[in-house]
Image (tube, rainbow, N blue to C red; front, side, top):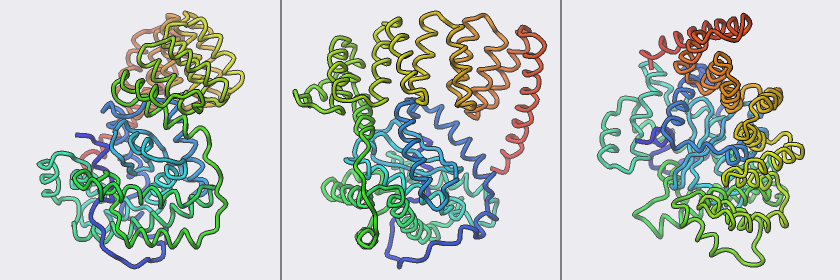
Length: 475
């Protein structure tokens, strides 16, 4: 049962409704469920998603999605709102918004898009759901606890993403969270609102709003051709011809200056395709695409697929060709990745040191350089580099994990457990963070200062754990 699938709130069949003005976002929805309550539930859901194994733990992909998402959010009606974008390893074409401002995009959807504006259109649509407070508004009006209603809502709409009809029937049969008839009306309105916000957000951010229209139109064509396997996005974001006509009419009236796709988009799409399915099959797919005039995306995918398939020579050949046609930061990151994967650690350290100097603000390269130093046995230098990078990214959990590895290699047991606790804390794994702090206290080394920090953090996290447990019966 994939927990990320059943939390989309926009599921049921759409019927025709007239366009209405977007609601005042200072409405009473926030009296139903507070931002703090929604954020807490979102953190718990994200904890479950990460533990399921379908969370894409790929810094290159997630950095791109975060950058693209931030650009869209800054052009939205709530430009200062924090929204977290992440990828999910799932070949199905879908995306979803979760409580607390988390937006997930299936790798299958990214691969299925043909332009960056199509991907931006899907993300802008989901941003529309978030900034219009559709989650809070969906549970508004319930007589029972709003937090309980939201938690129950997840179960009630499991059918939207489940491939198991028995689970679907059971989920719908519960009906505990809210009235299905009421949700029909809300879904109709919410999808149109998300379209309107998304289109304007795209235009403000410099994307072609036709990207959203083109993507939805392509999915509708697939629905007609393969009626037995409706794209997941259409199941959870129902599309009608009336809604499509409304989208097209709005785009025709909009003023915008489209810009070409960022070249990074094609590399990320190739990266996802190179990582999909069996390694040898992925490699063969890119070999079939290769020509003497192959572009950067094909060569990037070919090099990565060859590396994944264990063919170091083929990976090197493809990467050498790639370097001649592209100097993007993702290319440099791939070079270090291939060297590390093929055990050339000394070369990786040298290559990544130069890459860090060229791209000091690119986290995936910083991660790779720290890992290369650790694999080279230079834990002291790795720790110094990590501490320096934390000046830029003080709350990044991966740097804390790398710091824990460096401290462990240096024999600093208490500091290693403390760093791992900080990583868990930032991933909302409070119980595991407390366990690490208790181990840090038992280690007994580190001196008075380190032990004082451990005690203070243990006190803070136990308070957080108490608050989380106090909220559990209500949810």
